[in-house]
Image (cartoon, rainbow, N blue to C red; front, top):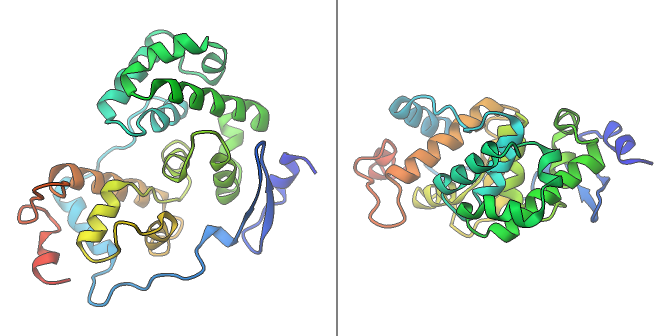
Length: 258
């Protein structure tokens, strides 16, 4: 059976083999974890956190990018660096007319490395960009539209089989470039939840992801906005050092012991 056949016969129930170019993976129903963490005693629902942040900050209009492919490039280049550095690298690629899968795959490796140097780890990231573009061509004929038509959890497993794409990057691609209903968990999310007693900072990625996905099932728009609001909160108030809890829109939950 071809990869296309596997994708066409995908369903959400049961366990099904997923064939990728690198490995044979197995997914369980909707990717959910077996032992779900209950809502901590006395905690308000997460939508109360969302409403507080949205009232304070308003819509965030994320993710910055002029096309789905540019969003994907940004998701890879922003690994282990600030968005400002990733944006500088993207501007270089745009100036040189290289923001397409075919162009990235065909450009000489050293030239690509030079253009994305501002993003840091540029040698590794150049290989990651090329690996994604090869995957897109091999599995979906180079079509992002065809790729994003694949079932969410099957596509997530395939993305995780691509060199340099981990859970956070895969979910960023799915949510922000493909409008798939997955929640992106980053350092800001784990820090905020840990400080509010929802989890600990070493919580498994998928456990944290599912806290959001079970409360807002299938709501890509809400996941997009909520993650962007958390990032804004983390940068402005919930900082690694000297957090400004008294000024944060969520500070009252700490004061109330909730």
